[in-house]
View 1 (tube, helix red, strand yellow):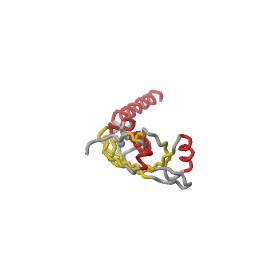
View 2 (view 1 turned 180 degrees about the vertical axis):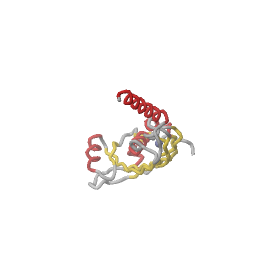
View 3 (view 1 turned 180 degrees about the horizontal axis):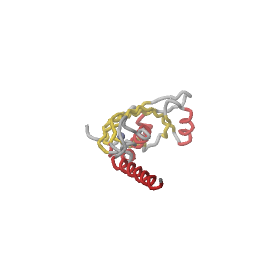
View 4 (view 1 turned 90 degrees about the vertical axis):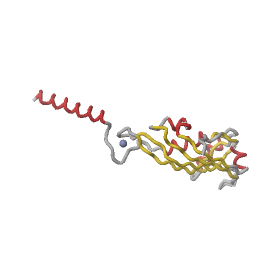
Length: 169
Ligand SMILES: [Zn+2]
């Protein structure tokens, strides 16, 4: 599959006409995600499909469905080494006609998001937002140690403290 950044779409007509897009994005193609990673080896397989929909209150709200899966390489918060993190995204978004309805309806909606039905809706930006939410805060290997240079600093600081104590006694 050719690596592809999700394109920008006319969100409403995409959903109403039940269009689909899919591709495979390299980590470095998603700029805001790339900034958070240890290395750019990861790949995400993504797909978006649209469909007409009526929300629980009877409002006409075309829907977009985003799926993405793959593996990214983040930085372990303890050893600062590479740590593989699986990504699995499966999100629905209803499309509201303007910013204020989107904000209000997003607060009401518990199981889906409400986004503005822009005619230049950036799928890449949506995917980036969802991936950033998935990235672990302070990711860590199950077992690892502090980086060697920090261990040395710690033991030499301890040695310095010891020699100080000896001098005082
Ligand atoms: Zn680690």
